[in-house]
Length: 296
Length: 299
Image (cartoon, rainbow over all chains, first blue to last red; front, side, top):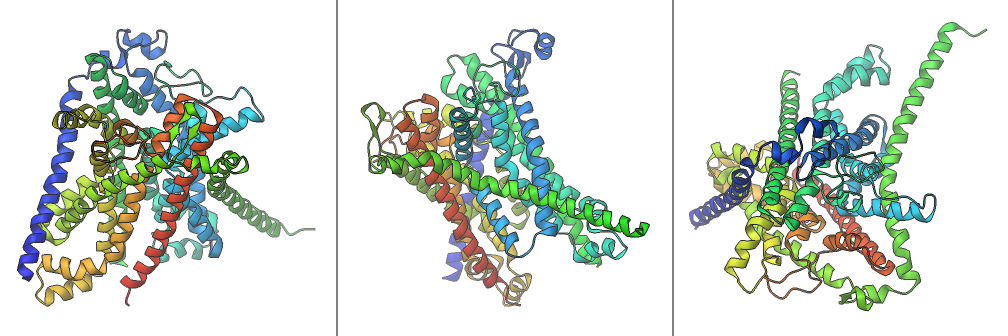
């Protein structure tokens, strides 16, 4: 009887693994097979000469170069907003906050982490409606608005990763600096942050990857299909995830479809590389502390 | 005359206080943004209550050109899609976790979990894209009466997206079980499979609940897969081949098609519902976690 149940469970688990692996391989294999063939200069620049396209002298039609640039600018801008705020909040929560305030702050961070990205986009849209009614009647959705909303979306990742990385440092190491006469800030900058560096960096990379892939937020806050290179932070822009979304629905020819596959493969390589980097840092970080624990 | 050492000490103290203040300021901004989001959604949803549109919005009919703005079909759509995706993903996740924790060969466990980890990094829009190109025509070929853009296709795609979340939560929960428990079970002659089924699984049962709740909220919160694959007809589905529209996709569609102010009011109601669902999920998870950690730590 007991043997029977074990065997049944084993069979079911094998089945689950085979089905999942099969589905994932089918998806990624399909993308790889269709996407790799599309990799050439035409995918990026269409019929425009590459150098003129890169310098922005000539506009690019039928190429994903503007979308790549848009995504990079968008991610840089939102990182610029989110990283200082997230690191500072994470440091405060790990080092300074205590008692009921700490649990209230943590609750707020958890709530922020749970908000679906479309609601974050709706917040940005509401912000524009509000600005139009009150301060700036000309306000419109734009790159800056998207960056702000994306920053809010990735903020909880940064806060939680910073906080956990700092809190993972063993108590003895926290006290060493203080006992030698460092003040709390010196201890933080010269001892704790370097020790937690890998963990924090992996949080930053994860946040960047999350900002690069999100589609729902930018859908409501100013991305368009044909804007060319972003002209300024108050203008509309193109982005890779949106281009993929748009081409899936609107592709009218084989060429446009191939462009969609190319864009999807590039986005996958980008986020995959970021993700593997973060995973590597994270695993070496936790291994360090396991060894330290063994020594101490 | 002030003593030089004392002023220096004083200045250092001031700097410490200033740094702490700066960090506190950042934290207040971060945490205050939740209130700002809730505030904006609420502010734009207020006319629903003050102008008495509540009954209109809580109806089963979405026909904006005839002045009908009911969002209940979308609520039903979200629930149906999330439930179907969970129904597919949860058993698979259980099987995968079982495989990695004793039911399968030990050597294969780590690479499998590595792959699952990698799956969390795959952009949602790519799932949607491949689904539109590959899965939707497949559904259309097998069931010629359907357009392919259906509850079924969206649920299949969405289940693949939420699978890693569920697996990783269950996995984390199983890992927390004390090593001594495993050793005790092994000493009593349990095989790895028996240890998992009769010792570890009952101990991690709250973790299963947490995984289910978290997976469900991921499924409710997803926009892109539903928008791309589910067909977006505002109706209550009767079969798996029917087209459905979720709350999230509804928000995206209404903003994109730019219609009347009352349509806008309805999407802020949708936003509030989604916010409420995820907040409720958070509170449920908090309760589960405090209880689970109480149950796990006996020493």
